[in-house]
Image 1 (spheres, rainbow, N blue to C red):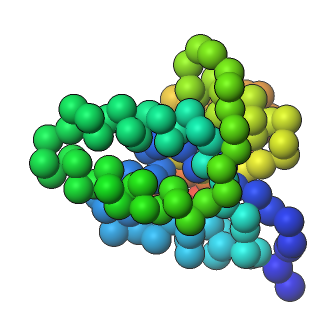
Image 2 (image 1 turned 90 degrees about the horizontal axis):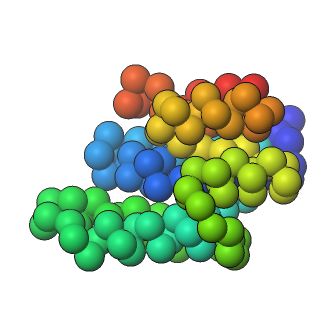
Image 3 (image 1 turned 135 degrees about the vertical axis):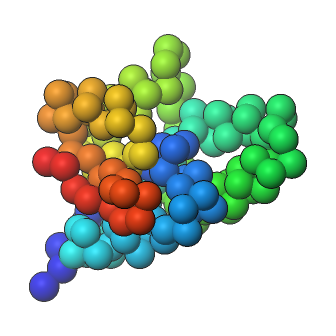
Length: 131
């Protein structure tokens, strides 16, 4: 019934969705993809979360802690690229055949133009697949 071997690359915005919108990204991805996906996070996203935490307000800091805990449930992809993190995420998803999960509309549009399938947050409640 479900497909095997689906990989999902999570960006910073989608890792922040669960504490903000009470959506279970892992469960939702499985439902939409009709498979139990393997979840990935890049070292650049982990660095971005760490940088955000350094200057975060107490409320945002709690959201970042949840996001980091979720990221620890994922396999880490080493990303030594330079330039914007979004560019590196599109490149990683494209070269590795991964679905990119994001709550960022601009990243979603750019990824789709490059032929990358995107899981995105819809109405702050559930995920939907584009592509």
